[in-house]
Image (cartoon, rainbow, N blue to C red; front, top):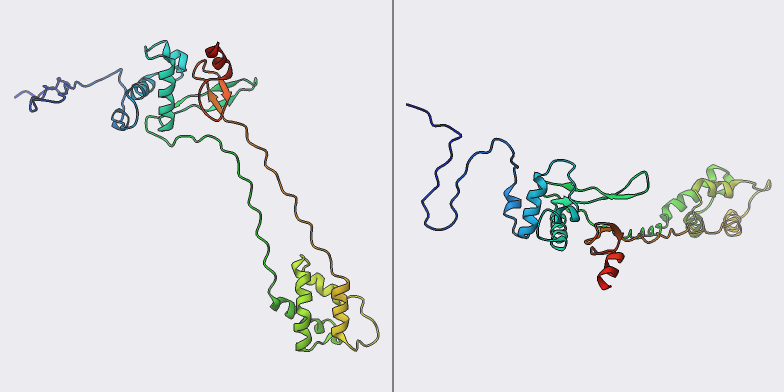
Length: 257
């Protein structure tokens, strides 16, 4: 019993009287593997699907500009440019602009055999939100600071009523960015040699007379507007800046003329 050859052409199926019938023969060289996600894409036009198949079959480095493709096929530059934009929108093609060391801007075309996320056009950078105002320090921190002054000097012994009465003044210092250690140093440095009869009044005077100003607000950074993204002209395949794809100024003038 002889074995069947694996590379023998398959017989056409005759089970259905209508519809497509496939006669499939194996390819051993000079072929391209294409996914059904592209060949049966529901949103791409047939021109775009065919152009994607052609691009994926080309050797690395083959130029695929609009004019080069229009010279091969009868669709023309307008339909080819529209098909290239379709492939970009659905992630099968990307055409980033690169600036060479000479300063010249060139287009680098990247073909994907599986759809990638389309590269979004550069949008203006939104200004950074302003930092929310800092919450005032809890009054407990102010009361603890005042109650601990007697550890620095026993003459600064305060009653509980005096602590709560002076706490708002200490909180004002803390809200203006003064560290607690600096507040304690201000209240306990340079004390008089004689006894302090009214420590609450003495501290209230220092808190009021030596109150520092508010910190200046940081300067607001103004983000300059971003230039329009680079587009590829549908007529001459040159780069030009515009918010939307289309033709450059020279091609538009030529069309009007």
